Structures are given as C-alpha cells and as structure tokens.
Image (tube, rainbow, N blue to C red):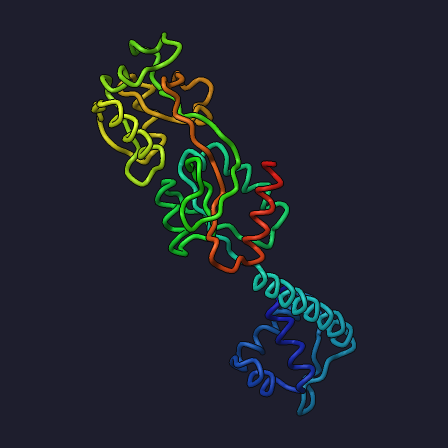
Length: 290
C-alpha cells in the first residue's frame, strides 16, 4: 500500500469519479484506475461501486475512506510542521584552523548543536589569519582562531584558552632526548611549516627573524596528517599544539625556548548586527569557557 494510492482513492470518492480526480491531481485517468485496482487486489476487497455513472464507495470503501482521510490529514500536517521547522533552521558559518578543528571543535560542535538543534553550523577550515580576514569581510559569521595579546582590528574577541606551541620531533632524531628545544637548534634541523595564513606561521617567522636565524624549511603544508606523518618518520620537525598529538603516534612534543604562547579566541565583527544564532553561539562559548 502506497501513499499515492490513498490520495487517488480519496480524491475519487470525494470528487465522484476518476475524471475529476485526474484533473485535480494532474495525473492520467489510467494511472488512477490502475492504482485503485491494485489497492483492491492487495486488500482483497471491493472499495468502489462501479455500477452507476459515478463511482461511490462500498461499505468497505466507506470504512477505508475514513481511515484513509485520517492518514492523509496526519501526513499533510507532518509535512507542514517539518517544512516550517526546516525554514526556521538557520545556518551559522564558523571558521577554524586545522589544529583547533582536530582537538577542540568536535566537542564544541556536539555540545552546541545538542543545545541549539535548529542552528546548522557550516564549518570552514582555514588558517587563523585567513579566517580572521574572512570574518572581517563578512564571509564568516565567527571564527575560533589563534590571536595575539590584543583582539584583531575591527573584531571583538572572547578568549577561550591560552597554550604554547611545542616543537614536535620523532623518537629517532637527535633532539628526541632533550627536555626542551632551543630555537637555534630547531633552525638547523629539517622543518615543516604551515602555509601562509596561519597565525603561528607569522609568529614563527618573526621569532626566527628577530633571532637572526633562517630555518631549514623542508616544505610548507596545511595538512595536519601529512605533517605528523613526516615527523613520526623522523624526516622533519614541526611546531604543533600538544593537544593534536595522540598516544602511540611516536611523536615527542618539546617545550620551545623561548616559549611560543598563543591565545585561542572566538572572534566576530563589532560593526554589524548580531543575529540570534551568532548571539547564541557567543553566549555558549562564553559559558563553556568561563
């Protein structure tokens, strides 16, 4: 039994014939006739009396019609309710860099969508500097990024946590047994850096330049898994947040001397009207990380 058959049967009964039902439903008379005959065959009952000029339901047909109309009314109500729900469902565009997306955002996503299921999050993965610029340009509603000690220009920010970049190396490298890694030693070893558009990339370039050092960059990448694979195989070192190193990866995270602190914050534009969804997300983040 199909919903289409119920619609056809109900229309024939209420309109008094196949012709009018076909016109109302914009289908062929043959399609309606075949659907109702298949329905009668399936039920093993005669639902329509075909003796006169109009089709009328039999006693069984009248009982079936009552149930049929109830089902169709329920389906129409269900459809209308969830179409309205879909229209109320709004999208929030959020930018995050790969490392934040790896260790922090899954928890945020699960908790926020659990408390605000009507809001759909569209995630854009980009470096902190790139995501910051996208928020400024109105291409993103918010971003969870690495920032300096002051909020980026034209943006409001709420700090979430403070952490330090670590120098990550494989167990088979000369620096594996050290308690910390000095910038001068790091500059002499093969190094993988994130591509431009990442806050810590800008921070590292400044640190190396101020120290009069030129790092031995093997290549640039924005693929976290690729970077970790090279580090794990002792092919290069990398600057990563320790939270992205998982147990059993054979990667050592060493504190850097001098340290490389950074702040993770949620940022948004100060000069625009904040929609209900943006306000909900900001409130959630403030509460979650207070």
